[in-house]
View (cartoon, rainbow, N blue to C red):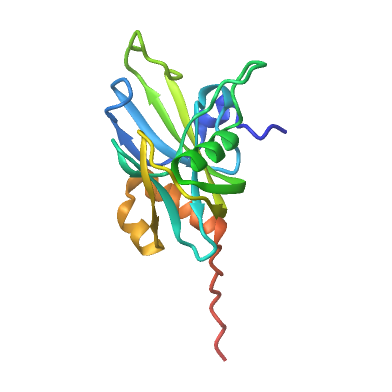
Length: 194
């Protein structure tokens, strides 16, 4: 069994937090979140992102100069022998580059799924009409001194309460799933009365 979801399976998977006409995808479009321990289809997933947690549950985010505070991640680099690096490798590499965090043992959380019914722009470099962005959760092994770059300022550490305020919609749904995966909450069962 493949760790990647088949395209047909991805297309019929139940989604949450749907939003229409997201500006950075050819219009009209729909973007939603699929929570899954399977990875999005390999050939339509150009990126990997990771929610990176400290042992105490705090989260380390990238501070992008253009987009501000965000989940670290980015494009999957091409491999010499063809194809692209695994989404978890991209998320691990990008987490280090954007925050100085060394992470390991990434666990799939889910992915953002987009579908465009519009005309593909001539220079559009992403999969079309369907595309996915893969998200993982990981614990931070250590953080090295971060050198500011043209892309990123020093990373931002958030408590759970702060993260709940910073994220919304699709990102909040993925964050909550990542946190539950890394720090499972016990299920309360009512105690039967006498």
